[in-house]
Image (cartoon, rainbow, N blue to C red):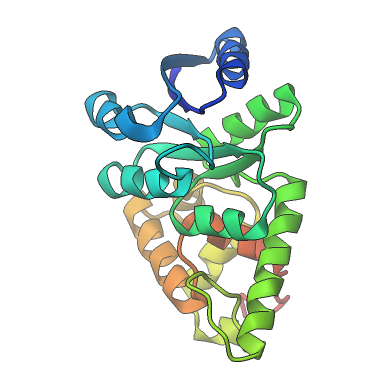
Length: 232
């Protein structure tokens, strides 16, 4: 099994050391760099292009969300997982909107952290049950603000109960496979099409459902059960 090159970014040295040891001892992850301050992170990502960046949300000088956005703008293929103490639904929603592949709390059991990271690397949803509840709260909060005429710079679930009528047959099929936790590569295999074609369908779904990332789409499906007749 090929080692996954990981970069750690966290301003707490003891926590960072513990995570590094956890990853190294797993036999699958290799920590190639550690940073306590965000200043040099983007340059390091440019130089080494790691497979995975574990990123704290609150750091001196620059927020983890700002750094997440900068990394994704330059290296969209680098997976970024927020590892944070914040259980604020707004932070979770913002991270998903900016392209994070996962959002984990620092008090998560070590074994569950490894399991979740493995799932993320396999293209599966990078949120555990607790994060799904937070996401549901975030979506509910956005809907409430929209009902009062206010707006948020983040996504919202479709208000029309017949939203699925706007989707093409292939988009509906793609959404069903996403609801079952399949990655783009596995969806392509099931549908007999290329990965790039699946990405086209996913991009169209994001536009029609007013979402911003594939992870946010997968999470939305989990919080909004698909109608029985979606493939009709």
